[in-house]
Image (cartoon, rainbow, N blue to C red; front, side, top):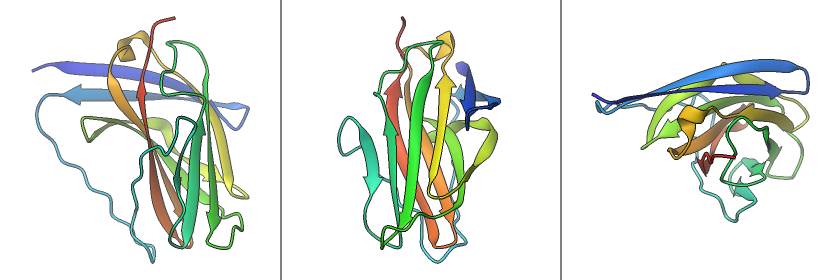
Length: 159
């Protein structure tokens, strides 16, 4: 069995710091997302190199990052924006996950962050163990109007 362990350091909201550990095993596992809100989760892939977005349904969201190739041990900033269908900012929470081959292999610590007035901004630092691994950076946004999932494929690079 091959095990990949990746620790990811994050600091969001300017002053808080957190770390995340991801573990990948070649043993098949399954995961599911259950939504208790009026809408089901929606998954998307980036529409361009600068953002992933959902523009239909009661919850609209955009995940923006500088690129798809963060550099090991260097800050990699991302932003999540969320509105209702009319464009009004929504508050709620965002769960940060790391996905390898379709399986959630890690979560930010803490995994859940507040979305206030429609936005969340944070910075991550990826460790050397993540270099070359095809990961998906996933944000799962939960609001009173529903939940959405925004995926951002990444491959961590050496400096």
